[in-house]
Image 1 (cartoon, rainbow, N blue to C red):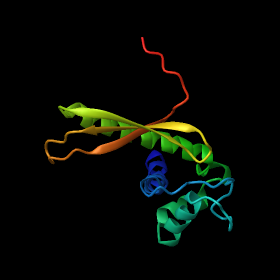
Image 2: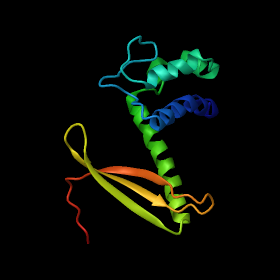
Image 3: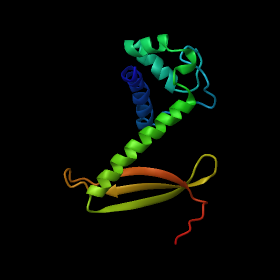
Image 4: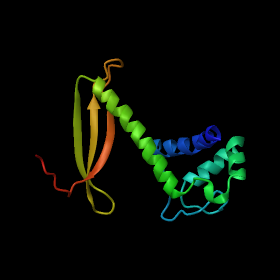
Length: 150
């Protein structure tokens, strides 16, 4: 049962990663729908429906057999999966930085669409195996927060 539950998560996690890589929002302003809803403002559920339409029989079977209140496709579960993906990606980036002999932290302040000033934090490091200097995004910080250094 645990193995089958993990298998059905694969399409959901891959969809979340794809949306992140392609800068596609998972949800719209209001997206409390289900896979069977015809109208959905978000992209997560329609992409999962596309997986089923494209022949993912194990995911389709899972959704047909699981109770409707236990599909684990809610926005809460989406957020939990996003947090898991974030943790894994950050660990991989930090492991690469630890291996590098040289690195730099970059910050750039900008105003978002709502007028809030944010600090974009990236890190660059020397990858000796590939002779490259990759730049990875780390996070956004509020530029209006006061930093206290001790």
